[in-house]
Structures are given as C-alpha cells and as structure tokens.
Amino acid sequence: MKKHRLVSGLALLTIAIGLGGCAKTSAENTSNNWGTIVKEAKKEGDVKSVGMPNSWANWGGTWNDLKTQYKIFHSDTDMSSAQELQKFKSEGTSKNAPDIGDIGINVAPSAEQEGLLAKYKTKYWNQIPSWAKDKKGYWSAGYTGSIVFITDKKNVKAADAPTSWKQLASGKYKVAVGDVSTEAQAQYSILAAAYANGGSEANLTPGLNYFAKLQKEKRLSTVDTTIQNLQKGEISVAVMWDFNAMNYAHQIDSKRYKITVPTDGTVRSGYAEVVNKHAAHPYAAKLARSYILSNKGQINLAQGYARPIRSNVKLPESAQKKLLPESAFKKVYHVKNNNTWNKTTLKLGQLWQNKVLGAK
Image (cartoon, rainbow, N blue to C red; front, side):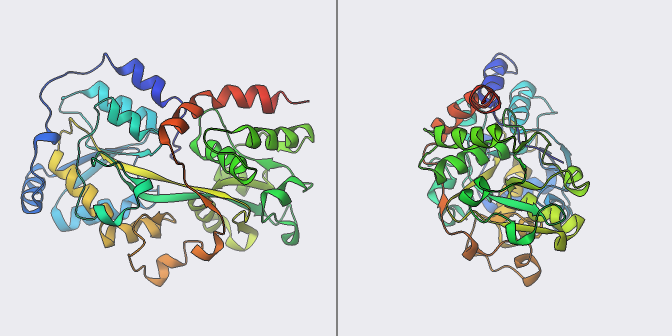
C-alpha cells in the first residue's frame, strides 16, 4: 500500500537540487488547447506516473478509462511524495522522466518553488476550492481525506467507540497513530488533535500534549496502522484518513468496525496530481490531470473511498456508499498556510520523540 511520507520533502528536494538537467522544458511549452492535448496525447500513447498505483483511491479505474477511450497505456512506480519529487528532479529531461505524480498538498508549494512543476489549470479550475489550489495553476487537489477514528468492535465495545477527542482521551483502550516521523496520515492526526484543543499548523503543542498524556497512561500503541494489523486484531482504535479507514473496513469486514468523525475537530487535506515540468509525455500528463478532475474521474476516486475535490459532481449510489456522509463532519479545519505546515512537519518527528514518546 502506498504511504505518503512527507516529512522529508524539503530535505530531499534540497539534496536533489544539483541533480538532473536544466535543459529547455517540455510540458511548460505545450499547448493547453483541449483538441491539441487529446490529439498529441494519443500520439504519445503512454503516461508514466509515480505514487499512483491502481489500488490507491481507485487510480486503476482512471488508467483503464484512458486506455479504453484514448489508447493511452499506463505504468506506475509507487513511492512517497518526497520520493516522487526527487524523481522529477533526478530524471531531468530524460526519456524516463515521470509524467505525473500524486503528492500531499503540504509539499506542493515546495515543489513549485523548486521549479519542478508545469502549470495547467484544466477547465475545472473554478470548481476547486481556494484552499486546495495555488493561484498560478501549478497544483490543485483532486481528492481529499479527513482524519477519523476506526474502532475494532472485537476489542472495544461499540458503545465505547470514541466520537470525539475528549472521549478518546478518557477511554481505556490503546490508540494507534502510525509513524509520525514519516507518514502524512500520522502527522495530520497530530494536527487534528491540536486543532480540537485550540492549536493549528503553527501551534502543535496542544496536539503533542494530548498524545503525551496517552503515552503517560501507557495508552499509546506502537503498532503501525496497516490493514494487516487491523485484520489481525492488533489495533483497538486507530486514527487515520477516512478513505483508508473505509477501504480497510470494507476489505476485512465492515460490520467489525465502527468509523467515527471526531465532533470536536478533524482536519481535511488534499492530494494534488501534478504535471512534471520535464514530463516525457506532457500531453498525456495534461490529459490525465484533466480526466482526474472530470465527472468520471472524480467518480473513480469516490469508488476508491476518496472524497472528490469537486463538490458539484453527482455520485452514483455505489460511490456514495463508499464515503462518509458530509453531515458527519461537524467541525473541519483546513490548513491555512501550507508553507508553515511543511516547516512544522520537518520538525515533527523530533518533537514527537522528545515531547510524546519521552513523556513520563
């Protein structure tokens, strides 16, 4: 399973600055005319992605559509957001340069500043909320995730499943959040706890204090939040993205788990499908990005338990059933400054080690 490991994004990008060529770009100099994009993409016949495997958010549905409708064949190398951007840089203008990647939006500003991305707004630009895109068109989210709790009813009574951070703090079960030093899901979990307790991306202290209390009570689980560990019953309650929680529950046994959105605060963030500035198949990359934001592309994502970024897409009942109802989200926080959050995540692993795991 793909894990977006974002914490080292800036560091890896900095290391990669000297790699790759500075030749004339390809994707930036291509036409944005839709007819031209389709014509040239068909000629290219291939699209190479990084971090967009078939099994993640149902990317496979979109790749199959591109093959059927446009005769464009797809290949992917699964990797984290930071690795994706390093790959963009290291391959330069070579024929092996990836065309498109799926990265957490908290590293997207860094990618833009490093000059790794090509601008392309698509015709759906005005339907994407302002928090989920940059002004120039270098990146925009295609789908979102929100932090939720998943409770294994084999380990915790359904009546005791937490519905708020306050309830979670007063429980008797262990809580799993994953690897805070590397995983975006775990990092956003800390941010959600901070927000529920008066913090923000610029002030994670309330969130760190929250989990330090669990650590002192010996309630912080060291088990990783994987589908395998859930299935084996090694997790009582986990904090994770809603699309992962829903996906895992349906794969194992939906009746076994209770998924709840913390009523006192959750964080919603997005993942951006970005076009490599040096894409080997720039038109296929643009076509793919546009298709992802189309009605069918958004429905494909929903079929993979990911909430489409375009709220005006009418989802079929089969897709609606794979998403938590919007009414379940009582108090939602969006990161106000992705640059601040990116800098915070760079320090979060050490902060977690010192202030949480070291708490006595």
